[in-house]
Amino acid sequence: MIDPANSNVLYNQILHGWTGERTSDREAIEKWRQFVQESPSVQRRYLLARMFIFSGQGSEALKILKDISKEIEANAIRTAEQMAERETAGRCLLADSKEVKGLSVSLKGDLLVSYGKDSGAKVWNLPD
Image (cartoon, rainbow, N blue to C red; front, side, top):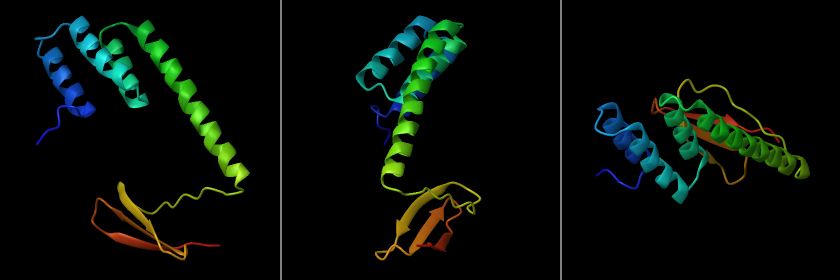
């Protein structure tokens, strides 16, 4: 069953009406803007910016994108600071050819299992 509160479902419904010319630019953007105001996540604001771009309102899109980029940059800086405080380093494992769907670490912390879209699982030995 499709969840009408799911942001992707609502966005696609709005776009369907908009591209099918049953909804005007203003109506489509206003519907999505109201939804974004309830929970202004980065993804939702980005999609609002895209709607502004496609409706020819680049200046409105730029305002949103500038705010989003500041927030993303601030989050990246906070994460780096937290890692530095804990004296930890992030590691990236580059071996899955497709999207990783899940990760699990052993209780001892020495093994990592990843599984992806290809339904295969990979076991990794983690260094100390």
